[in-house]
Image 1 (cartoon, one colour):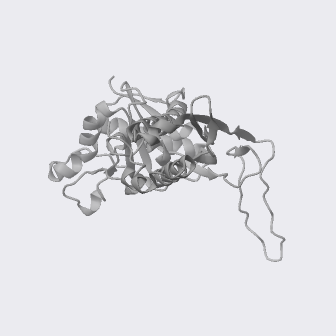
Image 2 (image 1 turned 180 degrees about the vertical axis):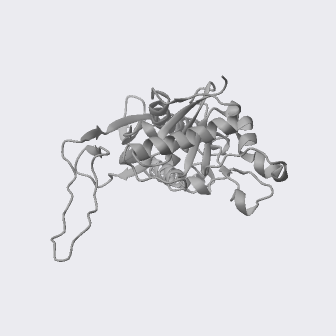
Image 3 (image 1 turned 60 degrees about the horizontal axis):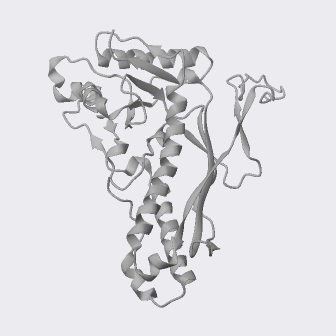
Length: 322
């Protein structure tokens, strides 16, 4: 696994002979810039695989397949394509509310001279989502800087950052894979099954009162071992367009491939909607605390977030065989 790059150790040479605090300050500044570079990189701009081929007008644009686990120097962030973010960085509460489908605004026909009827969001049809704070870290020893053992800082930083994103991704995906009552039976082949799942999601959401149409964007979630099979199903109509192929007729925004889900099924979902990701405190380093017991300084990283799925009708769990 290629290392995430946070530090330019050549720049540390200019600080040789400076105080420990100044050297550590540079280390932490580089770390903060590196983490910001990860979080600020838009998912859809990351390198991925685009299914190429003939693109007739009736077929539309060939879908883009994003393979998050294959992106070098970038942790698994594919879940960000599934959950809408609730920005709580300036919030004064450690919870946010998920409103039920019965909430929202209703529009009424207004007769001439009639006062407009105002809808109100129901206060009882909601659930609160609480933040979860995660914290970890390690000590940077005086001797590591004195004897230029920078690789130790590299290794521990990589482990810390990857552990952070792994915990976050595991939580996001586990909410999806733990949903019950959303199985879509296998029908003939994968193309047909995907089409059936997408149509079933749209029909279920419409029946429940959501405003959806056939142009809703879908995301497919799968284990990397199924990438080839899914890619072939999505590309079929583009690779041989004149053979009257079956094809996926619904807009597939992305394929999120991650080893954090089982290879026994494939999940299809409408992105966003009532899939929410609350972000109270972005991953960051706390000020270093001197620890004479280890002849170094303790460095603590922390952040706070949580995920919630407010409507399981947005998902289907596809069986891969009859």
